[in-house]
Length: 296
Image (cartoon, rainbow, N blue to C red; front, top):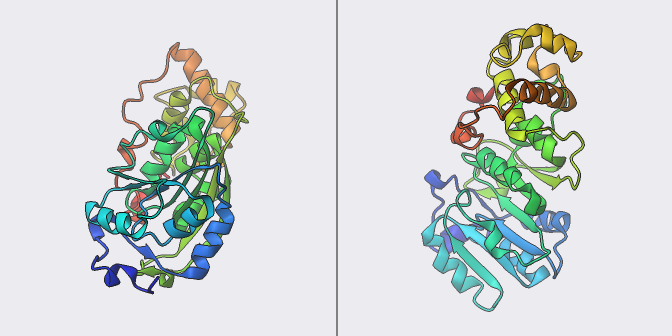
């Protein structure tokens, strides 16, 4: 591979797709070692780009499904990997793709991707919503997003993304990748994270949509206390009866405490809270402006 593969093959990274092509062989090898692909895996790569990561993944497991939105990259990928009969390209938006169509009975997906910064959070929520069919996920993300995924209560990075990711998955930040490993280089550091869905949820909610709604309400005004941010769902007396300090700000509560509140709200309403505005719909521009992401 050349250092600038997209120039060599006549394709320039497109800003509207959030493309930053990985070219650092050391980083690529490190990612593949972290994934540790096996011949029996149902491996799928999101946004293969010019195939820098695709190539070693195919060499390791012999088969791979990729989902690519940029139609101009499709012929490049077909040509580059024509000698792999079990290499399958699915043209389209990963948010709309039915990943169940590539699974064999008894299999779970292993998902890999250098996710575009502008859609990384909605994609993560999309995969979390289908966690039952996922064995693990390894993503290259904006370093700031990885910090939010792994954040602990009380930290400035802790928010909706932290809570909902940790509700479904074990989150493991692996290593940081500098801008120079990409072409064009992004303006921020990236990081690799491993997300492993739990076989048994550590804190199962009675209704996870209600949990999403409670967490969204709590962090809609993260500088205010829980007494104020949750008053539309549950009153202060009911929160105190659950052992919740209503004078705390939302980032002080643990996942277990949010589940406890969610279950109480669910019992009060007798049905799931109206949650028509899904996480994905509210996340379309999350990563375009870090300053606008405070509720996360």
